[in-house]
Image 1 (spheres, rainbow, N blue to C red):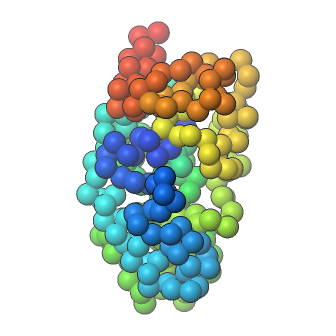
Image 2 (image 1 turned 90 degrees about the vertical axis):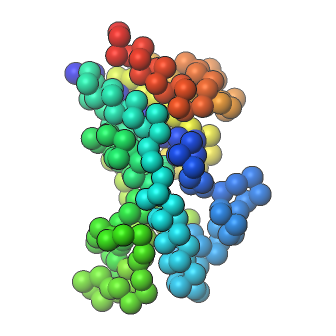
Length: 227
């Protein structure tokens, strides 16, 4: 069975109504990144950071997978599919994908403030101050902040090296180390990019589908299932 590796970014979640990263003004949902998405912010004002992610989690749980998420799951009828996502929502899983690797964590889980490898499911959308891990430290969102290591990047690179087909959806390849994953995909492998505004730097290396995810992904999936 051929292996398809799909790398997804904010563009696929945006069509479900989620803002998964900063806007053009540098803000994320009206907040400065430095105030809500760094270890220093957590040290400075953990209550603010916790509330910020509680509200993001609430939005994620209210959102529903869109046609792009659902179409990617359909590929599993014929291919061995791994989705690598930069997004912190769980829409791929809820859309039916069986193998999802979250580069930047997943907001529906919590993690220990002392050991990021200790993660727990969250009951509902609210993670409260005073909820502690088994080591006695405050639980926080299971999200990789700026300035923190990306623990899943090595595993993602290994997955990309084994791809028979590579698909990039809704990512501008502006965030590293995730953007560097395309360098691990074998050169001879067919590579597709689906985005309404395709970055110039990828134009020569990819088969371009200049559409939003909910249009381009079902279109490509239909072609791949027929082949």
